[in-house]
Amino acid sequence: MEIRLYLSTKLEQLVCKAFRSRRKTIPIEDIGVVILDHQQITISQALIAKLLNHNVALITCDQTHHPSGLLLN
Image (cartoon, rainbow, N blue to C red; front, side, top):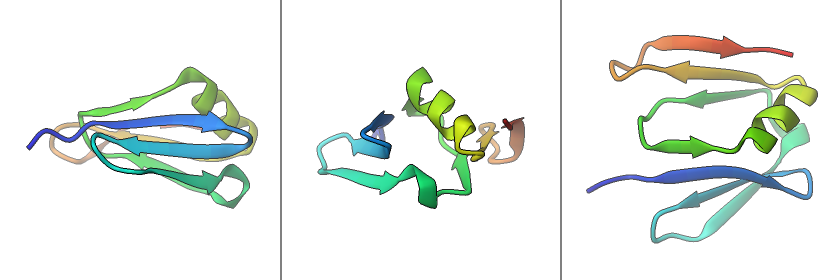
């Protein structure tokens, strides 16, 4: 089964939309770290900018699930 996850933002919320499932939202002010640990995640640039403006650390992982990048404000 192919997993596709779309991360975006709306009204100061992180919006998670998975293929064939309901949308979930999380207040960005409640987030400290986001770890992207799957190759089928799509994240909007607007969300990246908003996360960094709220001092959220954004960590990306490679196909072996090891950290490969870190974005900080």
